[in-house]
Amino acid sequence: MVETRGRVRPRKEAKRNVNDGATVHFEQPCVGLDVHKGTTTATYLAAGGRRMKQRTFPTTRTHLLAFAREVGTSVPIVLEASTAGKAVATALKEAGSELHMAAPNKVALITKAPVKTDERDSATLAHLYQAGFLPECHVPPPEIDRLRTLVRARQDLGVKATVVRNQVHALVTRNLLDEEMKEHSDWFGVGGIRRLTRLPLPAEERGHLARALEQLSLLADQEVALQAELAKTATERPDV
Image (cartoon, one colour):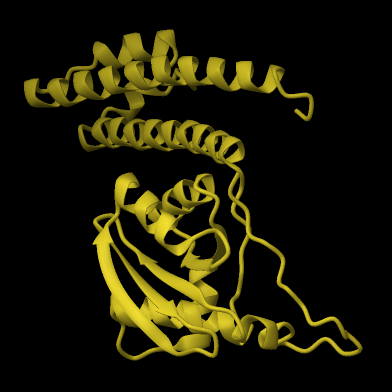
């Protein structure tokens, strides 16, 4: 399960300031990660904010697990939320690391760095954590992330199908054949497709139409399969 931890606040909380917990964070070491698909850059900060070292390693499970063993489970690791970042967070969480995920847009608003490098970005995340200014965000557990991926895939199919349908409408219009289709409210039902295939189109346009209809048929098959997978997932969840 990948989720951020709550900030550690001072024991006396008479007043809650924007940097509550900064003293506690400042007194402990941490590591900032700038994650990319190919490489990850790590900046190690000692207690008090002194930079100890930086290094870059490939973003692979083997190197990440070696990094986790090197850092240990008691040193906070800070990284930005992204597709690669969440994958790295999952691997490190499985290794027992303490993780803190930052919202990239909020980090950008805070830092406003004119020059960005992997080394600077990883150091910035570590310093923000120690200063108590890290804008943490929620990262869903793997099961919820998998469900989100399924729903996004279903949405993508709908978008792709709309694009192809619009291309077919444009094809008919550029050949001045909209009048031939006026009796069909649904161009992509059984009757509508039958009429589309009988339109007096040039050979090249008939080829474009055939490819578009083939794509729609494939998307429809994928939609049915994905709907079944979503339905099965839903019936197994009492919260749905």
